Length: 95
Image (cartoon, rainbow, N blue to C red):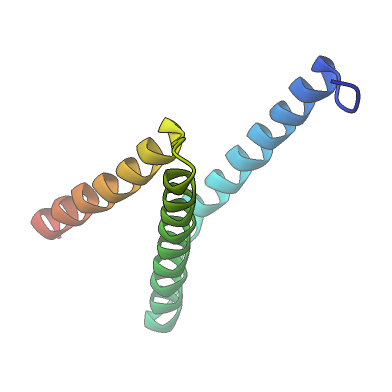
């Protein structure tokens, strides 16, 4: 721990948590005006989702080849897929 003492690690984690929380707040409050903006927002969400799935899948395969799979990668991948499925079912029934 020569390069990052425990205090620096904790401050870095706190900073990342604050930035991610601010980003999530920004995403939740975002409003689209017309159909084109709604389409752009949907496409950006789709690309972000597929990018996340791709990176997690790559990490899962890479770690599987090394015979050491981090459970957080599997959990993250499962949560992304299940939450997307649940959200789609919910919005199809209520819209």
